[in-house]
Image 1 (tube, rainbow, N blue to C red):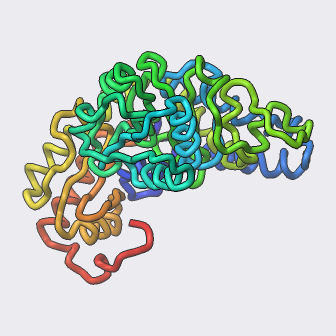
Image 2: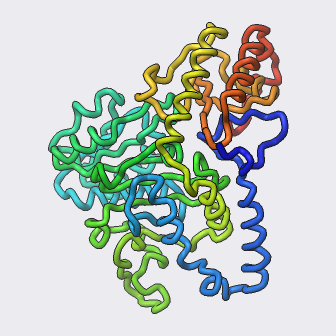
Image 3: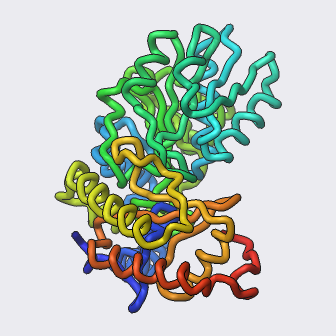
Amino acid sequence: MRKNHFHLPEGVIYLDGNSLGPLPKKAAERVTQTVGNEWGDLLIKGWNEAGWFHQPAVLGNRLAPLIGAPQDSVVLGDTLSIKVYQALAAGLKMRPGRKVILSDTGNFPTDLYMAEGLINLIGNDIELKVVSPEQVEDHVDDSVAVMMLTQVDYRTGRLHDMASLTRKAHDAGAVALWDLAHSAGALPVDLEGCKVEFAVGCTYKYLNAGPGSPAFIYVRPDLADDAEPALSGWMGHASPFAFDIGYQPSPGIERMRVGTPPVLQMAALDAALDVWEGVSMHEVRARSIELSELFIREVENRCPQLKLVSPREYENRGSQVSFAFKEGYAAMQALIAAGVIGDFRAPDVMRFGFTPLYIDADDVMKAVAVVEDIMRNKSWDRQEFKQRAAVT
Protein backbone atom coordinates (compact mmCIF):
# COMPACT_ATOMS: atom_id res chain seq x y z
CA MET A 1 0.00 0.00 0.00
CA ARG A 2 1.63 3.25 -1.14
CA LYS A 3 -1.26 5.68 -1.03
CA ASN A 4 0.97 8.44 0.34
CA HIS A 5 2.96 8.36 -2.92
CA PHE A 6 -0.01 9.70 -4.90
CA HIS A 7 -1.91 12.95 -5.15
CA LEU A 8 -5.49 11.85 -4.44
CA PRO A 9 -8.12 14.59 -4.13
CA GLU A 10 -9.83 14.83 -0.77
CA GLY A 11 -13.17 13.07 -0.64
CA VAL A 12 -12.57 11.02 -3.80
CA ILE A 13 -12.39 7.24 -4.07
CA TYR A 14 -10.58 6.57 -7.32
CA LEU A 15 -11.60 3.32 -9.00
CA ASP A 16 -10.49 4.26 -12.51
CA GLY A 17 -6.76 3.55 -12.44
CA ASN A 18 -7.44 0.95 -15.12
CA SER A 19 -8.11 3.87 -17.46
CA LEU A 20 -5.84 6.66 -16.14
CA GLY A 21 -3.65 6.30 -13.11
CA PRO A 22 -3.51 9.10 -10.53
CA LEU A 23 -0.61 11.52 -10.26
CA PRO A 24 2.44 10.25 -8.36
CA LYS A 25 3.60 13.12 -6.17
CA LYS A 26 7.18 12.82 -7.39
CA ALA A 27 6.08 13.04 -11.03
CA ALA A 28 5.14 16.70 -10.74
CA GLU A 29 8.47 17.44 -9.07
CA ARG A 30 10.39 15.47 -11.69
CA VAL A 31 8.67 17.17 -14.62
CA THR A 32 9.25 20.59 -13.06
CA GLN A 33 12.93 19.72 -12.64
CA THR A 34 13.14 18.53 -16.24
CA VAL A 35 11.51 21.71 -17.51
CA GLY A 36 13.58 24.10 -15.42
CA ASN A 37 16.94 22.47 -14.79
CA GLU A 38 17.22 20.50 -18.01
CA TRP A 39 15.22 22.15 -20.79
CA GLY A 40 15.59 25.59 -19.20
CA ASP A 41 19.24 25.55 -18.20
CA LEU A 42 20.76 22.97 -20.51
CA LEU A 43 18.73 23.75 -23.63
CA ILE A 44 19.72 21.38 -26.44
CA LYS A 45 22.61 20.06 -24.34
CA GLY A 46 19.97 18.10 -22.44
CA TRP A 47 20.01 15.39 -25.10
CA ASN A 48 23.49 14.41 -23.94
CA GLU A 49 23.99 15.87 -20.49
CA ALA A 50 20.55 14.92 -19.12
CA GLY A 51 20.42 11.64 -21.02
CA TRP A 52 17.26 12.44 -22.96
CA PHE A 53 18.38 10.50 -26.02
CA HIS A 54 18.78 7.24 -24.09
CA GLN A 55 15.56 7.52 -22.05
CA PRO A 56 13.51 5.10 -24.21
CA ALA A 57 15.89 2.19 -23.53
CA VAL A 58 16.74 3.13 -19.93
CA LEU A 59 13.06 3.30 -19.00
CA GLY A 60 12.40 0.13 -20.99
CA ASN A 61 14.83 -1.66 -18.71
CA ARG A 62 13.12 -0.21 -15.62
CA LEU A 63 9.71 -1.37 -16.86
CA ALA A 64 10.87 -4.81 -18.04
CA PRO A 65 10.65 -6.60 -14.65
CA LEU A 66 6.98 -5.61 -14.32
CA ILE A 67 6.12 -7.58 -17.47
CA GLY A 68 8.51 -10.50 -17.08
CA ALA A 69 10.87 -9.33 -19.80
CA PRO A 70 14.68 -9.56 -19.82
CA GLN A 71 16.87 -6.49 -19.95
CA ASP A 72 17.35 -4.76 -23.31
CA SER A 73 14.12 -6.19 -24.75
CA VAL A 74 11.76 -3.25 -24.14
CA VAL A 75 11.82 0.28 -25.53
CA LEU A 76 9.52 3.25 -24.89
CA GLY A 77 8.13 5.87 -27.24
CA ASP A 78 5.28 6.90 -29.52
CA THR A 79 1.71 5.71 -28.94
CA LEU A 80 0.26 2.27 -28.38
CA SER A 81 -1.38 2.32 -31.80
CA ILE A 82 2.00 2.86 -33.43
CA LYS A 83 3.55 0.05 -31.44
CA VAL A 84 0.70 -2.30 -32.39
CA TYR A 85 1.31 -1.43 -36.04
CA GLN A 86 5.04 -2.07 -35.77
CA ALA A 87 4.68 -5.39 -33.97
CA LEU A 88 1.93 -6.65 -36.26
CA ALA A 89 3.80 -5.70 -39.41
CA ALA A 90 6.97 -7.38 -38.13
CA GLY A 91 5.03 -10.50 -37.20
CA LEU A 92 3.42 -10.76 -40.64
CA LYS A 93 6.82 -10.38 -42.27
CA MET A 94 8.07 -13.34 -40.23
CA ARG A 95 5.35 -15.64 -41.65
CA PRO A 96 5.27 -15.04 -45.41
CA GLY A 97 2.62 -17.09 -47.16
CA ARG A 98 0.24 -17.11 -44.21
CA LYS A 99 -2.82 -14.92 -44.64
CA VAL A 100 -4.64 -14.65 -41.31
CA ILE A 101 -4.36 -12.25 -38.40
CA LEU A 102 -6.39 -13.86 -35.61
CA SER A 103 -7.96 -11.68 -32.94
CA ASP A 104 -11.10 -11.56 -30.83
CA THR A 105 -14.05 -9.35 -29.98
CA GLY A 106 -12.50 -8.55 -26.60
CA ASN A 107 -9.53 -6.87 -28.22
CA PHE A 108 -9.33 -3.13 -27.83
CA PRO A 109 -10.83 -1.60 -30.98
CA THR A 110 -7.76 0.48 -31.86
CA ASP A 111 -5.73 -2.72 -32.26
CA LEU A 112 -8.28 -3.98 -34.77
CA TYR A 113 -8.32 -0.61 -36.52
CA MET A 114 -4.54 -0.67 -36.90
CA ALA A 115 -4.77 -4.20 -38.32
CA GLU A 116 -7.41 -3.07 -40.82
CA GLY A 117 -5.27 -0.12 -41.86
CA LEU A 118 -2.19 -2.30 -42.33
CA ILE A 119 -4.17 -4.82 -44.37
CA ASN A 120 -5.57 -2.04 -46.59
CA LEU A 121 -2.03 -0.83 -47.19
CA ILE A 122 -0.28 -4.10 -47.96
CA GLY A 123 -3.17 -6.03 -49.52
CA ASN A 124 -1.85 -9.46 -50.44
CA ASP A 125 -5.13 -11.12 -49.41
CA ILE A 126 -4.37 -10.80 -45.70
CA GLU A 127 -7.49 -11.44 -43.60
CA LEU A 128 -8.35 -10.18 -40.13
CA LYS A 129 -10.35 -12.94 -38.45
CA VAL A 130 -12.16 -11.80 -35.31
CA VAL A 131 -13.82 -14.48 -33.18
CA SER A 132 -15.24 -14.57 -29.66
CA PRO A 133 -12.65 -14.85 -26.86
CA GLU A 134 -13.81 -18.39 -26.13
CA GLN A 135 -13.23 -19.43 -29.75
CA VAL A 136 -9.65 -18.22 -30.18
CA GLU A 137 -8.03 -21.55 -29.37
CA ASP A 138 -10.23 -23.38 -31.90
CA HIS A 139 -9.20 -21.01 -34.69
CA VAL A 140 -5.43 -21.20 -34.23
CA ASP A 141 -4.23 -23.25 -37.20
CA ASP A 142 -1.58 -23.25 -39.91
CA SER A 143 -3.29 -20.39 -41.77
CA VAL A 144 -2.58 -17.94 -38.93
CA ALA A 145 0.42 -15.67 -39.30
CA VAL A 146 -0.13 -13.62 -36.14
CA MET A 147 -2.36 -14.20 -33.13
CA MET A 148 -3.01 -10.68 -31.83
CA LEU A 149 -4.79 -10.50 -28.47
CA THR A 150 -5.28 -8.15 -25.55
CA GLN A 151 -4.59 -10.14 -22.39
CA VAL A 152 -7.25 -8.40 -20.28
CA ASP A 153 -10.53 -7.39 -21.93
CA TYR A 154 -10.92 -3.63 -21.54
CA ARG A 155 -14.69 -3.91 -21.13
CA THR A 156 -15.24 -6.91 -18.85
CA GLY A 157 -11.79 -7.62 -17.39
CA ARG A 158 -11.84 -11.18 -18.79
CA LEU A 159 -8.30 -12.58 -18.65
CA HIS A 160 -6.76 -14.70 -21.40
CA ASP A 161 -4.37 -17.51 -20.47
CA MET A 162 -1.23 -16.12 -22.10
CA ALA A 163 0.88 -19.24 -21.58
CA SER A 164 -1.68 -21.65 -23.01
CA LEU A 165 -2.66 -19.56 -26.02
CA THR A 166 0.93 -18.66 -26.87
CA ARG A 167 1.85 -22.32 -26.74
CA LYS A 168 -1.10 -23.09 -29.02
CA ALA A 169 0.03 -20.41 -31.47
CA HIS A 170 3.57 -21.75 -31.51
CA ASP A 171 2.37 -25.30 -32.05
CA ALA A 172 0.58 -24.02 -35.16
CA GLY A 173 3.64 -22.07 -36.30
CA ALA A 174 2.05 -18.65 -35.63
CA VAL A 175 3.52 -15.53 -34.02
CA ALA A 176 2.05 -14.32 -30.72
CA LEU A 177 1.43 -10.59 -30.18
CA TRP A 178 -0.01 -9.51 -26.83
CA ASP A 179 -1.40 -6.12 -25.84
CA LEU A 180 -0.67 -5.56 -22.13
CA ALA A 181 -2.48 -2.24 -21.74
CA HIS A 182 -4.65 -3.63 -18.93
CA SER A 183 -2.02 -6.04 -17.59
CA ALA A 184 1.18 -4.06 -17.00
CA GLY A 185 1.17 -2.98 -13.38
CA ALA A 186 -2.01 -4.95 -12.64
CA LEU A 187 -0.91 -8.58 -12.57
CA PRO A 188 2.19 -10.73 -13.03
CA VAL A 189 3.19 -11.18 -16.67
CA ASP A 190 5.85 -13.61 -17.89
CA LEU A 191 6.75 -12.67 -21.45
CA GLU A 192 10.10 -14.44 -21.29
CA GLY A 193 8.70 -17.64 -19.79
CA CYS A 194 5.86 -17.77 -22.32
CA LYS A 195 8.30 -17.17 -25.21
CA VAL A 196 6.06 -14.42 -26.60
CA GLU A 197 7.42 -12.85 -29.78
CA PHE A 198 5.93 -9.36 -29.40
CA ALA A 199 4.13 -7.39 -26.71
CA VAL A 200 2.97 -3.81 -26.51
CA GLY A 201 1.30 -1.68 -23.88
CA CYS A 202 0.70 1.77 -22.46
CA THR A 203 2.03 3.46 -19.32
CA TYR A 204 -0.82 5.79 -18.35
CA LYS A 205 -3.10 3.20 -16.73
CA TYR A 206 -1.76 1.06 -13.89
CA LEU A 207 1.75 2.47 -14.36
CA ASN A 208 0.53 6.01 -13.56
CA ALA A 209 2.72 7.98 -15.99
CA GLY A 210 0.02 10.46 -16.99
CA PRO A 211 -2.22 11.21 -19.98
CA GLY A 212 -0.40 10.77 -23.26
CA SER A 213 2.56 8.98 -21.69
CA PRO A 214 4.61 6.82 -24.09
CA ALA A 215 3.81 3.25 -25.04
CA PHE A 216 6.23 0.34 -24.88
CA ILE A 217 7.12 -2.49 -27.21
CA TYR A 218 8.79 -5.79 -26.38
CA VAL A 219 10.55 -8.00 -28.91
CA ARG A 220 11.85 -11.43 -27.94
CA PRO A 221 15.65 -11.04 -27.78
CA ASP A 222 16.44 -13.77 -30.31
CA LEU A 223 14.30 -11.91 -32.88
CA ALA A 224 15.34 -8.34 -32.11
CA ASP A 225 18.14 -8.09 -34.68
CA ASP A 226 15.91 -9.30 -37.49
CA ALA A 227 12.44 -7.94 -36.75
CA GLU A 228 11.53 -5.30 -39.32
CA PRO A 229 10.21 -2.15 -37.63
CA ALA A 230 7.92 -1.14 -40.56
CA LEU A 231 7.98 2.51 -39.46
CA SER A 232 11.60 3.27 -40.20
CA GLY A 233 12.00 6.43 -38.17
CA TRP A 234 15.12 8.47 -37.59
CA MET A 235 15.46 7.42 -33.97
CA GLY A 236 15.45 3.74 -34.93
CA HIS A 237 18.37 4.18 -37.33
CA ALA A 238 21.65 2.47 -36.49
CA SER A 239 23.45 5.84 -36.70
CA PRO A 240 20.85 8.60 -36.59
CA PHE A 241 23.40 11.39 -36.49
CA ALA A 242 25.32 10.11 -39.48
CA PHE A 243 22.34 11.43 -41.48
CA ASP A 244 22.62 8.70 -44.07
CA ILE A 245 20.13 8.88 -46.92
CA GLY A 246 19.25 5.19 -46.64
CA TYR A 247 17.71 3.55 -43.59
CA GLN A 248 19.72 1.02 -41.61
CA PRO A 249 17.93 -0.30 -38.52
CA SER A 250 19.63 -0.18 -35.16
CA PRO A 251 20.65 -3.54 -33.74
CA GLY A 252 18.35 -4.96 -31.08
CA ILE A 253 15.23 -3.47 -29.58
CA GLU A 254 16.15 0.14 -30.37
CA ARG A 255 15.23 -0.41 -34.00
CA MET A 256 11.63 -0.16 -32.75
CA ARG A 257 12.12 3.49 -31.88
CA VAL A 258 10.40 5.81 -34.34
CA GLY A 259 10.07 9.47 -33.40
CA THR A 260 11.67 11.89 -30.98
CA PRO A 261 11.06 10.71 -27.42
CA PRO A 262 8.54 12.77 -25.40
CA VAL A 263 11.04 13.97 -22.81
CA LEU A 264 8.59 15.55 -20.37
CA GLN A 265 6.30 12.50 -20.37
CA MET A 266 9.27 10.23 -19.91
CA ALA A 267 10.33 12.26 -16.89
CA ALA A 268 6.87 11.61 -15.41
CA LEU A 269 7.19 7.90 -16.20
CA ASP A 270 10.61 7.76 -14.57
CA ALA A 271 9.11 9.14 -11.36
CA ALA A 272 6.09 6.85 -11.61
CA LEU A 273 8.36 3.82 -11.86
CA ASP A 274 10.02 4.88 -8.59
CA VAL A 275 6.77 3.93 -6.84
CA TRP A 276 7.21 0.34 -8.04
CA GLU A 277 10.66 -0.13 -6.52
CA GLY A 278 10.51 -3.13 -4.18
CA VAL A 279 6.90 -3.96 -5.07
CA SER A 280 6.01 -7.59 -5.78
CA MET A 281 3.55 -8.05 -8.64
CA HIS A 282 2.36 -11.26 -6.99
CA GLU A 283 1.47 -9.32 -3.85
CA VAL A 284 -0.27 -6.66 -5.93
CA ARG A 285 -2.26 -9.36 -7.67
CA ALA A 286 -3.25 -11.08 -4.44
CA ARG A 287 -4.43 -7.82 -2.92
CA SER A 288 -6.36 -6.75 -6.03
CA ILE A 289 -8.19 -10.08 -5.95
CA GLU A 290 -9.16 -9.53 -2.31
CA LEU A 291 -10.47 -6.04 -3.07
CA SER A 292 -12.38 -7.03 -6.20
CA GLU A 293 -13.93 -10.07 -4.49
CA LEU A 294 -15.08 -7.83 -1.64
CA PHE A 295 -16.58 -5.33 -4.09
CA ILE A 296 -18.43 -8.00 -6.07
CA ARG A 297 -19.85 -9.64 -2.98
CA GLU A 298 -21.07 -6.39 -1.45
CA VAL A 299 -22.50 -4.92 -4.66
CA GLU A 300 -24.38 -8.10 -5.50
CA ASN A 301 -25.81 -8.26 -1.99
CA ARG A 302 -26.92 -4.64 -1.95
CA CYS A 303 -27.61 -3.71 -5.59
CA PRO A 304 -29.63 -6.41 -7.41
CA GLN A 305 -30.18 -3.99 -10.30
CA LEU A 306 -26.55 -4.44 -11.35
CA LYS A 307 -25.48 -7.53 -13.27
CA LEU A 308 -21.90 -8.79 -13.07
CA VAL A 309 -20.40 -9.09 -16.56
CA SER A 310 -16.84 -9.78 -15.47
CA PRO A 311 -15.86 -13.43 -15.01
CA ARG A 312 -16.96 -14.56 -11.57
CA GLU A 313 -13.81 -16.63 -11.00
CA TYR A 314 -11.00 -14.27 -10.02
CA GLU A 315 -8.41 -16.32 -11.88
CA ASN A 316 -10.24 -15.47 -15.11
CA ARG A 317 -10.23 -11.70 -14.78
CA GLY A 318 -7.74 -8.87 -14.42
CA SER A 319 -7.84 -6.06 -11.86
CA GLN A 320 -11.16 -4.55 -12.86
CA VAL A 321 -14.79 -5.45 -12.22
CA SER A 322 -17.64 -4.54 -14.57
CA PHE A 323 -21.35 -4.45 -13.96
CA ALA A 324 -24.06 -3.95 -16.57
CA PHE A 325 -26.97 -1.58 -16.00
CA LYS A 326 -29.30 -0.17 -18.64
CA GLU A 327 -28.72 3.36 -17.39
CA GLY A 328 -25.06 2.69 -16.69
CA TYR A 329 -23.81 5.97 -18.12
CA ALA A 330 -26.10 8.07 -15.94
CA ALA A 331 -25.41 5.91 -12.89
CA MET A 332 -21.66 6.35 -13.35
CA GLN A 333 -22.04 10.12 -13.67
CA ALA A 334 -24.02 10.13 -10.44
CA LEU A 335 -21.26 8.12 -8.77
CA ILE A 336 -18.59 10.49 -10.00
CA ALA A 337 -20.58 13.45 -8.72
CA ALA A 338 -20.71 11.69 -5.33
CA GLY A 339 -16.92 11.19 -5.27
CA VAL A 340 -16.62 7.59 -6.50
CA ILE A 341 -14.83 7.65 -9.85
CA GLY A 342 -15.13 4.71 -12.21
CA ASP A 343 -16.03 4.87 -15.88
CA PHE A 344 -18.47 3.65 -18.52
CA ARG A 345 -18.11 1.59 -21.68
CA ALA A 346 -20.88 1.26 -24.23
CA PRO A 347 -23.44 -0.04 -24.36
CA ASP A 348 -24.17 -0.48 -20.65
CA VAL A 349 -20.99 -1.35 -18.71
CA MET A 350 -19.86 0.35 -15.51
CA ARG A 351 -16.16 -0.33 -14.87
CA PHE A 352 -14.31 -0.24 -11.56
CA GLY A 353 -10.55 -0.72 -11.24
CA PHE A 354 -8.81 -2.10 -8.14
CA THR A 355 -5.28 -0.83 -7.69
CA PRO A 356 -3.79 -1.83 -4.34
CA LEU A 357 -1.04 0.78 -4.45
CA TYR A 358 -3.64 3.33 -3.35
CA ILE A 359 -6.99 1.52 -2.80
CA ASP A 360 -7.79 -0.43 0.37
CA ALA A 361 -10.75 -2.32 1.83
CA ASP A 362 -12.06 0.78 3.57
CA ASP A 363 -12.19 2.59 0.23
CA VAL A 364 -14.07 -0.35 -1.27
CA MET A 365 -16.69 -0.39 1.47
CA LYS A 366 -17.21 3.36 1.25
CA ALA A 367 -17.59 3.08 -2.53
CA VAL A 368 -20.14 0.28 -2.20
CA ALA A 369 -22.20 2.39 0.20
CA VAL A 370 -22.34 5.17 -2.39
CA VAL A 371 -23.29 2.73 -5.17
CA GLU A 372 -26.06 1.32 -2.98
CA ASP A 373 -27.42 4.76 -2.15
CA ILE A 374 -27.51 5.86 -5.78
CA MET A 375 -29.16 2.68 -6.98
CA ARG A 376 -31.71 2.54 -4.14
CA ASN A 377 -32.76 6.17 -4.50
CA LYS A 378 -32.46 6.28 -8.30
CA SER A 379 -30.49 9.47 -7.96
CA TRP A 380 -28.96 8.72 -11.36
CA ASP A 381 -32.34 9.54 -12.95
CA ARG A 382 -31.54 13.18 -13.59
CA GLN A 383 -31.06 14.84 -16.96
CA GLU A 384 -27.68 16.25 -16.03
CA PHE A 385 -26.34 12.70 -15.57
CA LYS A 386 -27.72 11.50 -18.91
CA GLN A 387 -26.02 14.13 -21.03
CA ARG A 388 -23.16 12.33 -22.80
CA ALA A 389 -19.71 13.90 -22.70
CA ALA A 390 -17.04 13.38 -25.35
CA VAL A 391 -15.14 10.96 -23.11
CA THR A 392 -17.12 8.34 -21.21
